[in-house]
Length: 489
Ligand code: PLP
Image (cartoon, rainbow, N blue to C red; front, side):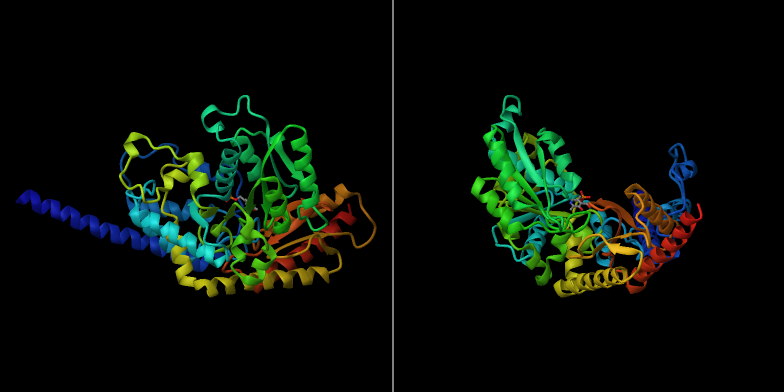
């Protein structure tokens, strides 16, 4: 009896520890979400600074919570780059929203592994349902079904694996030795994840044809058709096109309907990388820009980019699961079940174990509602238009590309004279570095036809007009200071 009561006490103690610790973690998270602006967006540290302060060896015995949380507050939180900071305007800005953060906590507590329906029934069925919500939000036909991966890079890899399997099913068993060389097509603006998929699938980088874009950085369907026909005539086996809706550099949108027609006429798989713009396409006026999306064989969009879901959450939509199953389904004895009618998510890709990402997507959509999500996206679109207007009117700056969505590409240009292109590139690189050093906003760069340009990406739920205005004023003021310094050199 005595033994039982001490076991009960231990359970009691553990329960209260769980509550105490989780409340403390919740307080830390809430403080952070409400006050991330107390930090510089990027910490002023050098490589190795954090490592030098971390214990070199693991603790032999468990440590006290005070020590662990204390180190988190001292060493970790201040030394991350604050993607959740409203001044984070680099790459594609993202949001760890409140419903997303709450869902992450609960999914960690549940800790389900959704490899089979039977190992995670609710996680499997919620994943299918919430992907269907997205399908409806994107006005796609009911043939499209979805599942959730960690990243768009993986979603694109899986889509191209399905495309490869459709063109050459025997490669699954025999590999590629002796097979005719296969080729894949994308624009010269497509994301590097397409190149990585070529590497991983054994197709090789040389087999990726990067097709010329027009003056607005959109893939040219005429050049695409020519390249496919040329390759086929030369004995290659063209298998797929990756069109981009929202390119990384400028957010340009390839002409999807025309590209789909080229694919249909020639029997190629069309994968649309809508990692970023697919999120905004829940607004009917943006969906119009993605006309032809419904003609794709597969589509990736990343709710962790612009649908306020914390990293990581990438949705791959395909016309039924059969193509992915044909490429990947493989059931060892220890994973056999008698639930043939249910979806086993492990059949749809490389990963066996998978975490419960659908929970955060579901909670975010429920908490914001479709109209709430649209309102946030429209607010960002409006801020980007406003920022573009300020730069268009500012002497010493020019817009470097059209602004169809929430990214503004601009560059500082000389007020007089015409310096060599490399000097102008160096000026813009230094300009970004100076603004970033101030720590109020974070910006990134890209290279376009005109040279190096500044990218200002709006997409965080907490980013307001004053943050965008700060980016404008800091770029303007630092450019003036830099011009003066360069003149006196
Ligand atoms: N596709 C596009 C257009 C992107 O901009 C990115 C990343 O920014 C990716 C794919 C890769 O996304 P992920 O980091 O989810 O692999």
